[in-house]
Amino acid sequence: MVPKDIPILLTSSVVVHDTGVALKDTQERIRLTLESIREWLKVEPSLRIVVCDGSQHDFTSAVAEQFPAAAIECLHFENPQELVRQYGRGYGEGEIVRFALENSRFIAQAGCFAKCTSKLWVENFVACAAGWQGGLRFKAVFLDVFSPFKPTRLAYIDTRFYITSCRDYRQHFQEAHFRIRKDEGYGLEECFRDIFLEQGFQGSLFTLPPVRPLSAV
Image (cartoon, rainbow, N blue to C red; front, side):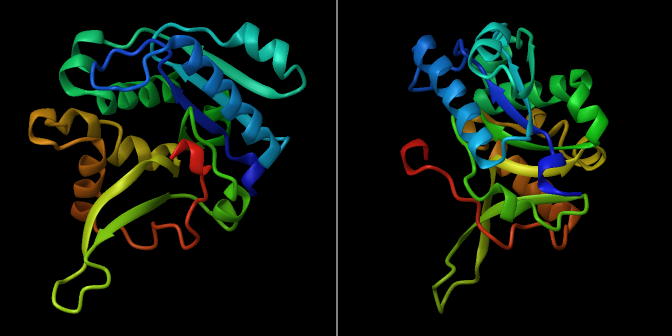
C-alpha cells in the first residue's frame, strides 16, 4: 500500500474533559487542529483525512471553507465525560479511535489508518509509511540505551502517532484504554507498551523516526 492510500485519523477534543490538560482554550484547540490539517495536506495533498472530535465539535463547515478540494471526513460524538475525567485523556483518545473505526467511510474502505493527535503532523510521513504492508508500526521509547551497566528497557509506546491495520488494532489495542490506572501513573502509553510486550510483536517499530514540528512536541 502506498502512503497516500492510508487515511490519517486526527483525534480531537475541542472541549477538554480531562482537567489535567493544560491547553483548555477551545478556539486555540480548533485553530491547532485546522493547522494540523493544513500541514498534513502539505505533506501529501492527496491524503484522505478523518477528523474525529470527542466533544461534539463539528469541523465540517470550517473544513469546507478552508480546504474545499481536500478529501476530509468530519466525525463527532460526545465522549463519556465522567470516565474521561476519571481516567484521563488517554481514555478519551481510546474512545475516539473506537468511534472512528465504527463510523469512518475512509477507514473502512482502506482497512487501515494512521492515527495522529490533532495538534501534530508528521513531516516525513511518506518515508515512514513507505513499504508498509499491513500490521502495526509504532515508535517506541527506550530507557538506558547508552548505559553499559543496565539492560535497555522499553519505557512506553508513543501513542501520538502510529500506523495500523483495522484488524490488528481491533484485535490488540481497541480496549487498551480500559487498562488505564491514572492514579498510579499508568496511562495509555504504558497500556500499549504492555500489550506490545505480551504479544511479542516483531518488526513493528518504525525504522525511521517520525519527524514532528518542534513547536508542537
